[in-house]
Length: 110
Image 1 (tube, rainbow, N blue to C red):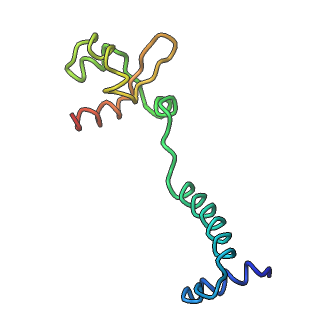
Image 2 (image 1 turned 180 degrees about the horizontal axis):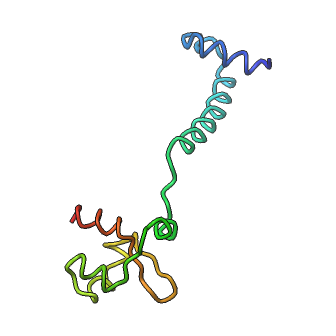
């Protein structure tokens, strides 16, 4: 076991012993532990699926006209506002596709 590992083991067992750690060593430990903490945070929080992945999961993506009818908005309004109001939509070529589950969630929030 290295000195640093032994020191960490001691500090985990008794955090009050941190007062005995020299300042330079404490700073080095904090930097290393911050990297470990960030890596653990990233592993603990699931990544958000991209709009393309959500479309793949959706049973049947809705077209612009279907999304407009479902949201009781005009097709023009949906086309003009999809980036800000419905960011879950995705462009596939020149076609706008809307996952049904995301439309339902959006309708509940609105």
